Length: 182
Length: 395
Image (cartoon, rainbow over all chains, first blue to last red; front, side):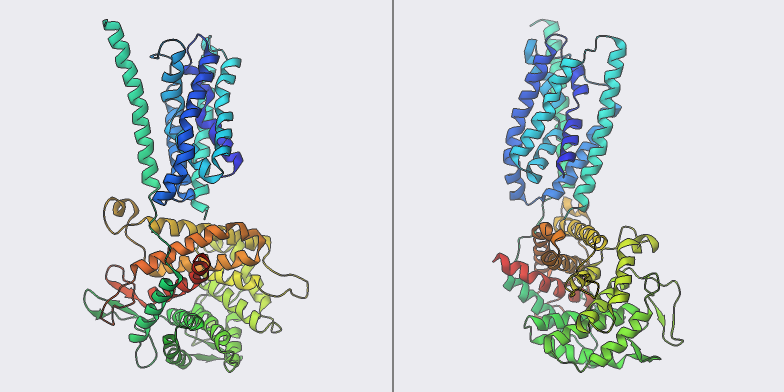
């Protein structure tokens, strides 16, 4: 997978507009940043360990890319067709960064699969930098977007669906990339 | 604990549980698509031994007139009727390739097989000759004869090569497509006849003829054919998915090694390279998919039955051509390692699936659903021989 496709897929699978809906009204930027950081930390063992594991079980990078493409496609369809997540129920205070922001909203199978595939196709450091950049859009988006009015909430939902459509496109592109790779 | 806090804890658990379910679903989808491969690379010696055993099977079952045992059903213990000139030519090629790596049994088998083929030639006006009505058969006889010329350095068959070549040039249309069937009685093309493989076979034959006889003008029809193949063939002839063309892979490896022409042109052009790259992907995905197949269990259901050995062999041959091409074309050089991996994988499958038995009808053959056909051995032998340099480099 090219770096551009990785970047697009990473941004689409993180989907900051959708995550924004799950942030609590109080301290959304801090909670969003913490949730993104927790997610990034959770991805580290996948990125570092998975290539070795996949090599052990003899799964080719291109085959994994196809599989991740399918997962992204399915995840994109689910995100596009379902209501955005809400901030309740959640752990109290800033611990909401763990539940629901990091899990289950941000740390999805699509993100885990993409992280693993990116580490195989590029390298663990490159994968971690790209993923960190994509995850940084969560607090950044929270900083610039308030969804206090109904109109803005609807716009946020629509934007989340547009990004989900980009995730479907990314999934198809990854699938094709895997099929036609050697 | 209050009722409210119990309710919150319950919905929290439900939320986390939903997330875990999503992960289980995601992992399920990953596992369904990304099955592990099973292709530990054999040693070069193991691959060579498998090729030799394949040659021995062809030799042990060759008939007295020089033709091959075409198809055998081991469940019924019966020879199944049928024959193909194209597969005779292809098997002759595999035998000549085997001679090239010192498999001595191939020599005594190739001699009568060649005599049989020469006896089946049809002489046509214009000092042309055809090996049966399927034009691809003539092409494969040409590539086998050129292979023989490489092994022996003997030029006695050169006039025959020219006659066969002239026939092949007549099968190439102005557009660059080829006629698949020739009416030998009327010496006319069967209009509209097409084959997924004859285009690549004829391209390779003409490419080889140009390499052997550079002043004879075989390159012009070859170039025309090549352009048609890479830019139009699949769409114009309605092949979908695109043809996985191992013969074109051989051909492009040959063309890439041509010396520069009078215009200074050498190697492949951008369209040909792009086509070769796409073909590498087609061969690669087939090798990966096949290596994930298992004879039983859940994977048997998700991946289906194992492919014909002939099909797997063609994938190896195609990868072999691309691998050689990667040595001469910079545009394909970065892919050479991955192509070599897949080629070694195909060799692994072929070594693993070969039959070993005390019965000469079975020993050295590749069966699928109890049936083997001579092109199973043909393509398997050729693929194993293509893999030898890759395996030798890794040992």
